[in-house]
Length: 229
Ligand code: IPE
Ligand code: MG
Image (cartoon, rainbow, N blue to C red; front, side, top):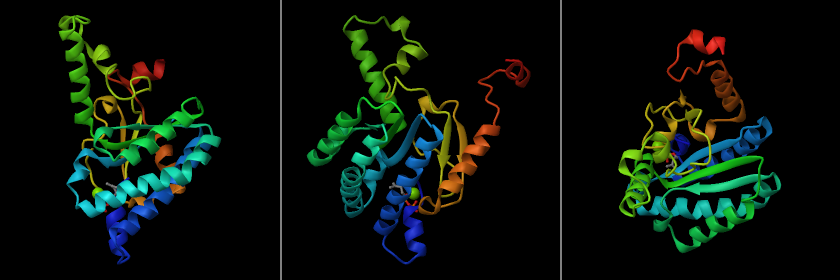
């Protein structure tokens, strides 16, 4: 969800104004996803690297996450959406950790859609965390090093119970992944748009999904093989 700061700057407003506008758009995108039957929506709210931002901006964002969760959680729950967070929560404030636990506990049985919020998350952090847990299993004699393969390893990553990423949208014009989901996005279809996140819209989202529907996903096979199956 990139481009909040630049959007605000264009309007001669503080960056925080852009983050607020961005959080309102997220509401619309979640609603549309749920209506369209999207099963899992993961949003990159704050990366491990975003902690390098001025303290004032990081703490504004942490406060905004709390407010947005408090504002949205009941509606999310009544729409049967399961809310989950991925990332290093140990560095979050006790209040935010509590808000996260409450949201996850309240919605844990919901089956319609999963809204996954990446907060203090990075793909490399995820992989390193998984490596640590695999190493602990080997050290404990639970697992032989020779038995570690892609499946075994992937089982230790965040959201191992959910499918890999199918479609990856980045707003705001940058052509990079910026340490978002890495392993689980190995075969994701990538979509980049110059539209800044607060200007992204349900119409832009539909346009992106329509493009996704036209992509042929081969997973290493030939086009002929895929058409035949
Ligand atoms: C939002 O956009 C992404 C967050 C880290 C919250 P930015 O804050 O990166 O906005 P730009 O890229 O400066 O425009
Ligand atoms: Mg940015």
